Amino acid sequence: MPTDGNPTEQAARIVRLLWRHSLPAKPGARGPKPGLTVDAVVAAGIALADREGIDKLTIRAVAAALDVRAMSIYTYVPSKEALLVLMVDAVAAEDAPIPADLPIRDRMIALAAAIRAELLAHPWLLEVSPWRQVLGPARMRRFENQLRAIDGAGLSDLAMDRAIAVLTDFATGNARLAVAAAGAADQLSDADWWRVHGPLLAEVVPVDDFPLASRVGATAGEHYQAPADPDGAFAYGVATLVDGILADHV
View 1: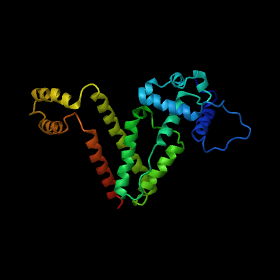
View 2 (view 1 turned 30 degrees about the horizontal axis):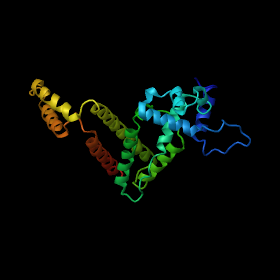
View 3 (view 1 turned 90 degrees about the vertical axis):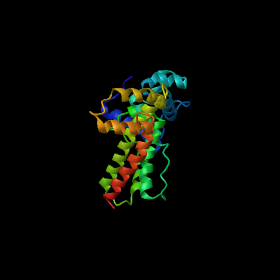
View 4 (view 1 turned 90 degrees about the horizontal axis):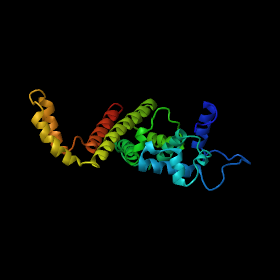
């Protein structure tokens, strides 16, 4: 069911829902009947998306999980799109703070690792567009904590923002590969896949045409026993990124 009202009204309602716990209660305001809350609807949406994927996330499915009529969900969230915004912010609230006593390099690596871990725990987040995501309190708190983690590294305000963006983009791309690898492993292990395809590729690929690719590919494949190594690539890549960022500003 579409959200009632014009775009400004729709945006205002989503913002109010996101910041609902920090907004003062209106005297005499009449809200939904007790028994169900926005938090409960959001939690049900997250559980459903974690279990079945974002394609299965519908207002009707959330209502069924809560054992209520679908129309009653609209009392709490105006649309599936609004529910997704609330879900993204609620997941961000799970963030653990980055220990302030870690060296700056380790804090920056921990920042990227936390983003990757969240995406691996909630793969449906990879299907939610990050563009124009309305900031809620949890995502704002995350940004504050990320800035605190890298404050003192000698970066300007703009460089701090860009460093977080670069680390986020890298962690997201690597998480996407790791999620794909996990899905493929449910059908056939990487080791078994390599045992089948490695020898076949060795038979058909003309080494003289691809001397470097053949040599490096064979070495990597034997080492990974898989098409790639998302975990190892993340460890190598994030360390390289952080060292590069710090080298430019220290």
